[in-house]
Amino acid sequence: MKDRQLWLMLLPYLVGLVVLVFGPALVTAAMAFTEYDLIGSPQWIGLANFVELATSVPFRAALENSLVFAAIAVPLRVAAALGLALLLHRRAPGAGTARTVATLPTAVPEIAYGLLWLWLFNPLYGPVNQLVRLVDDTAAPAWLTAPNDARAAIIVMSLFTIGEMLVVLLAARRALPQEVFELAALEGSSGWSLARRVTLPMLAPVIALLVLRDTILSFQFSFVPALVVTEGGPPPYSTTYLSLYIYRNAFEYLRYGHAAAATLVVLALTAIAVYAQWLVIRRYRALARRPL
Image (tube, rainbow, N blue to C red; front, top):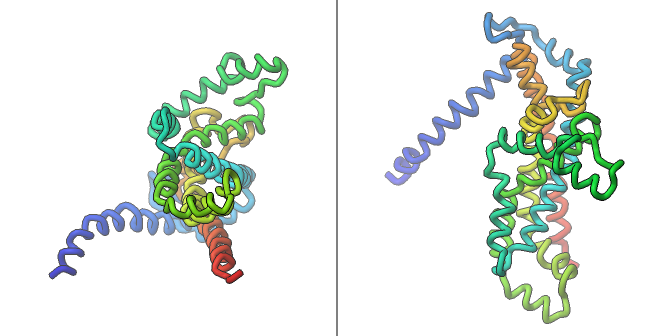
């Protein structure tokens, strides 16, 4: 009887999972081997879409941009969230306000967030360059017109939407047993030594989970900033990421089969990245359990 009740409770979730996740995933996988323009009937073309991806200059640029973004943005985002969590976990005057301010950008709709940064990064009259010119009038970056500056702008935008990670790390830090810190303090540990020897090792599982999660989401986060702020440029493809490449091929160029093939490539890359990180985590756990 209890098993039947549990299955009935799970049924809405399972139906949604099949209809909204597994079903579309199977359809996308099938469409990757077809030529489909969302108007006529799909035409089976085998591996032609994948062969085209292998020789496509825009796709190679999008792939490189996405990998570079993930390699730089993910560590910076996790480090920023961890640093804020260690600073703001204490109950102190103003800490609550600071936590609210730190998490607020995550609650802003993505389009509004992109439009805000479009104004902030305006090379001529944007507030960011206005502040830079106060220090050095010749050092103002061309955020929206220079390739490397535009890529840096997308990374900077990502560093302020870390509210979810911050909340998780705050909760994890407060859940750590206070007795351990008191014992470490009695042994003379303090400051960075305490963080390195006690706090970070105890938070390592949570940090690892957040790194895995953020690696997966990094291939999606760059879509709205690249579309709204830089429009995939400066030309030719300086901020064209895989998510934007897939969107444009599917809904602007009506090449749904080609976009589906690119989607499968993204899924494969995500799986490889997550698996590699899992191997590192497993190795770390094995070393941590080894007796001294």
